[in-house]
Image 1 (cartoon, helix red, strand yellow):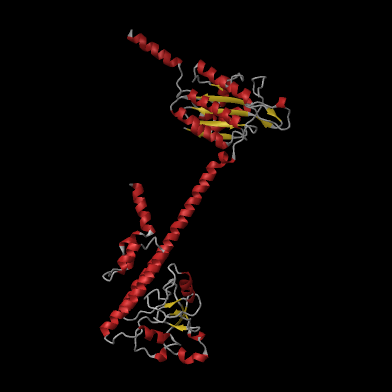
Image 2: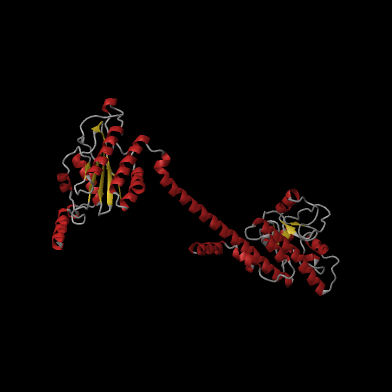
Length: 465
């Protein structure tokens, strides 16, 4: 009894061909599917009789409802769409000797040999879907008459979003039913809109633009940080010079731009005795004479004019750095102004000054005792006022890197660290923030013959699962 059962099972297995054993060539498929009224070609017997009948009925309904309009024809001559589906267990690779993908070659060849689609006024209306199960590949071949509606974008959408999930679960009948239904929907919608057709392209372009913008922003932040770093380094260096009594103001405290050094030749022969002076001569970064207040603080003339006319709190008649009363609106110095020295003392030789600059520096230090220690303290205090003002201006221009808490900490008399090494400033470095982000990221109806109308393939789209 047991032996008889085994013999019976072996006979049944031999009578049912395995998908892995059976391969199909184009000629073999054509020899098996000779009845063109049957739109579903299933030579391997993958579907049951009922499943075939259901799919066949769907295809007939699509062909009766989906039309391709021909501008040069009458309404009675409007051709209907013809659809064919070929599904095989496996492709015979030996019969495929072209460079095209096997599924594409089989689909376009069968489309052309069978002539799927009606032909009228130069348009063909055929659609052929070829599916090879064990090769896990498929291709939809389309004629030129249906391509305006079944664009490559829509074909890819059908395969990717409608069919693949069913094919992966080996629900082949459901995959074909969804394919037919979606094609019918696209014909009902008509031509695709611009956004439907080019959404993917627009999305890629948008992402590319966003990446470029983000890169530009990151580079701009890097340049800004480098500039702030340079300014803070300069302030640290100037602090050391101020402690040694060698600090010179070489930039505008408002805009922080460097004054322009004037070459000696620019002064001319009328001031030859001035040219021989060892002191450097400057004009503002705006090319105008430097504006020097009675307290000795120097500014670009343009910056000072903006400050007294457009100041946020209104000009109160005082120096923005040391808060000393300037008594009256100061006038710019002559065409070339000698470098102002915030550390000038009463012992400065007036003969080495240029016009009124040295006298203003003398008035700045009137009342200061000649005691060396007191003089050093006064120099530090005067420099600290200017340093804090410059830091405030730097923070106003670059609040991303210099915050109020940092300004308050740096302004304390007991702060001795380097500004560029301040932890809050170091953490604001765009490169540091980028590295932290990376680490976190890891963490109408038609009646007629059902035979094919002599159409041909004009391309298509394929995929795999």
